[in-house]
Image 1 (spheres, rainbow, N blue to C red):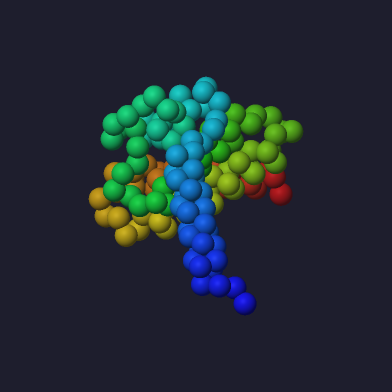
Image 2 (cartoon, rainbow, N blue to C red):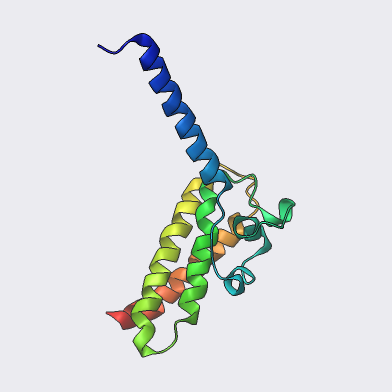
Length: 140
């Protein structure tokens, strides 16, 4: 039988380990080529860059689900760069990921009426759906 002292020690280690992982996850930056990040809206920049600060560089008043939106925008960029008939499948894959992440964001912000990027997210979803209708039909 494990003593209560050992059990408390194990629990304390587990809790501190989880807390450390959460801190690392919060502090971790997403990575993408600088040329792609530069094309993102400013509210995405803090997610990818270290030397930016201020509310214009972050998504605020929208909840924690918005961390998926900037990667969705990168996928949309990549879809738009995939030209030619040989790249149709790649383009559609990028668009499908962009749609999934944009829908995730929209679902996550539904309880945040003051979310400053709501219109941006809704417009992105319309663009992705339009492109999927165009390129998805050709891909079949």
